[in-house]
Image (tube, rainbow, N blue to C red; front, side, top):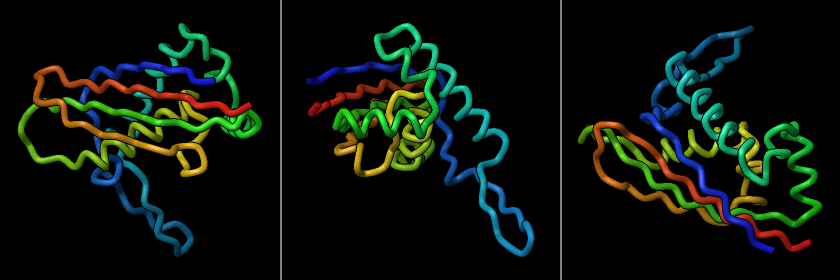
Length: 146
């Protein structure tokens, strides 16, 4: 069985990898996204979750990550993900870092069970040009064997 979900994010995508702070906690270096990158991902999660709640997969948005992973594994779910990103200007950005932020938001929102290789079989990232009001379109093809 195959299902396709289309999600849309309105806003610029900040790379958590390039926007981080380093904190020393008990002698360990902890690298975490800065406040702006964290707020950007939180906004993305909220937009995705709102869209999911209006779809047939609304129940997935309400489950814990662990529960989603167990259910997806039981169904034999895998994902093929296509991401189209527009940028607000011609400043150089790494698409793979932006895709990483999107993948984390998809997991946190409940759109996918997890972004590890056991579930995600293919990711396609496309630079879709420049738009003064940047956005990303995400298409998730969900393949289930059971």
